Length: 225
Image (cartoon, rainbow, N blue to C red; front, side, top):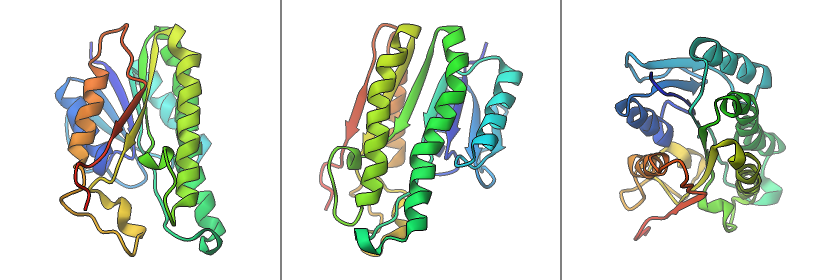
């Protein structure tokens, strides 16, 4: 029987690399995207969903559960960041970041947890950032969202571990993805980490034995320039 994974923000970066690695491991993977997914594989299904919309999230999760009867892995990867000094950040962008980075993560976790509890197993990965560990200039709002993810993850793993469910919070440093598309000063370069390397570390955490739990996974570029 194939194990089942759900990956949000599945069409690029860390999400897309995670999808590909899960497929290599024999998972049936459901990729959550607002636009179309570029992955083509017999065991991959693209579900169109705006993670900020609770009703859409609920519909997507119901679709997976009705078809598969279980979810073994949830990777909450969808997220974005805007760069600006606090007083210059548009209110709409503050809400967009919280709706995507925090609310969307909560919605998917909330809807999938009952299935994981029923089966007595599961692994949830919440993609935070090193911005969940320390503050950075011009990303105070983004840091606020990722500190929220960190706090949620820390409480959640203690809440669900007795049900056989693992929760791993991932703290990547600067990674060569399109995350920096909203930054005027930072452009992706080859001294950043590669998204496939971040995804590979998550797969190592996923492959741990049942009584072993990687709670926090922090990684940073060796020579970030």
